[in-house]
Length: 135
Image 1 (tube, helix red, strand yellow):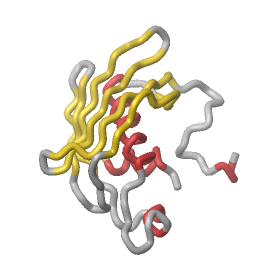
Image 2: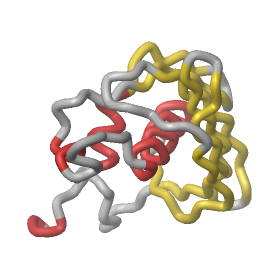
Image 3: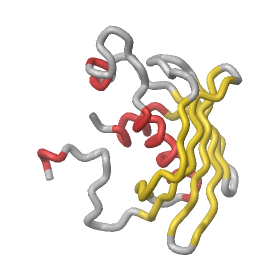
């Protein structure tokens, strides 16, 4: 499972402004993660949705970011593989970190709302896109 890599590939049609961005979000059914989440009824994992928020924020701020903490998160509806959702984020600088407020919506219905704290990625950081066995 590689949330950051999968999330980056799932983003399209990005519209980036100064501190806000929106994009289409679609995780393809073929991703290996869906074999175990859940075999009979696959759902897009929450960690993948949060990773997409971090990826979009990285594009918006033009710097590599990593998740430091989740201040608040609520899933209120399911997101299924191959569904095209809308992701919107707002970025605010907070000292040496950034606050990210993100929303995933599906046909006008909010499925996920989150407030995240992210840091600029430094050399030596272990991003979620790396396989731990290869480190």
